[in-house]
Length: 112
Image (cartoon, rainbow, N blue to C red; front, side, top):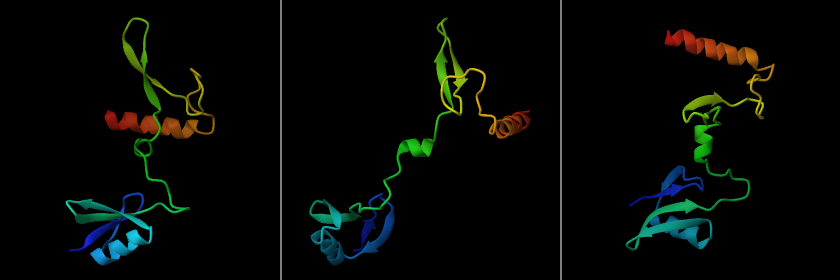
């Protein structure tokens, strides 16, 4: 029965034989996952130069808005400035403002 071989970031690479999986483990290249004595899968160890596994934060991206508590107990959404910091009026740096406004206008026309 073929055994799935995964990269260090858990991407499926191939299906290999049990004999090959054991050889990879003996060489110190892979870790075998066993259940009830049977080899379930082989996962290659991370090597220098291999990319790090993708994190949840990378899938979600950067949050450009956040919930801000108000003094009266209510909450509202506030935009985070693109250049960082706490600027109240300059949400986008000058070179990004045309792109930012185009996206906002496109959203408004689609919603209408």
